Amino acid sequence: MANKYNHFSLSSRFLFLLLPLLLQIHYVRSELQLNYYSESCPRAEEIIKEQVATLYHKHGNTAVSWIRNLFHDCMVKSCDASVYLDTANGQESEKTSPRNFGMRNFKYIETIKQALENECPKTVSCADIVALSARDGLLWLGGPRVEMRSGRKDSKESYLAEVENYLPNHNDSMSSVLSRFQSIGVDTEGTVALLGAHSVGRVHCVNLVHRLYPTVDPTIDPDYAEYLKGRCPSPDPNSEEVLYSRNDRETPMILDNMYYKNILSNKGLLIVDQELVTDPNTSPFVEKMAADNGYFHDQFARALHILSENNPLTGDQGEIRKVCRYVNSV
View 1 (cartoon, rainbow, N blue to C red):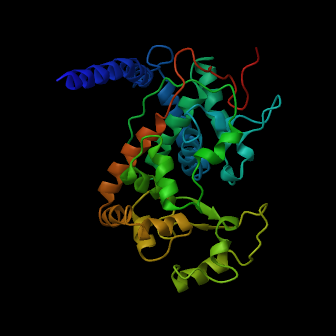
View 2 (view 1 turned 180 degrees about the horizontal axis):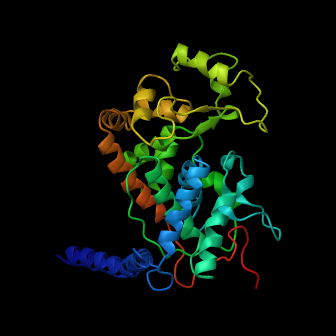
View 3 (view 1 turned 90 degrees about the horizontal axis):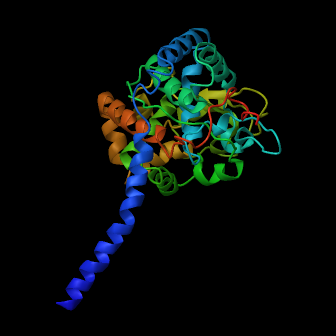
């Protein structure tokens, strides 16, 4: 009987010690809220929506960039716009990491930021612009509506040294990719859905020629391999040239389940795409998403929402940058 009570006592003490931590995590999450700027800048979300629409009509690929930028920002420590910081004051930018190769359209975040500064100076964070522009850009790509909360603050530092520890690489094993997503709360089903973002945009030849030369990866459909060689004719492409292949040739600017249909037909561009099909943990979800676009959209929206709220800086943490490329001067 004494052992039973001792066990109960230890368990109770453990829960007592754990409770403040759980409450703290909930408190940080709860500081993000829908319509966060309803009083401080009532038109903030409308301005972002207008700017995203204008930029999309001028440069359609910006819609893809907003989603990719959210992923590259939020996976590395926090959704805090650290990826937007340029190299300055001895801190090297995350943009210089090979994992961030090919990212672009950063300048248009500054376009959105300037419109917001004109309306409400020093009020809307760059981190919230990253999240809300991804939400609105997703709709232009035919994707689902995601209810994004806001209230994030901007980081005062870059995390270049941390990028490779957090961002999955296209050559990583599926177990490694799943582990990295699980570390921020995205489960296997959600990971498969988020990789469906490969349905839009493009892959630079430098990231896929290793599957074509000196010999073609036998898991690639032979006819598709010939097409890829036409897009990437050299085994050593110039990284400065914009040589690429579309992830999805049939609906390249629509976020749909064609991606899953393609990889089931051995038409995945990257190793990680093909591993989704061969890994027993992910393949059932691939087949389900290939068969049901609505299910894919539901899971994508759920996972993107989780990603967008990864460890945000709130309250007195961080700052509201005046210019997204640089921290505020003291």
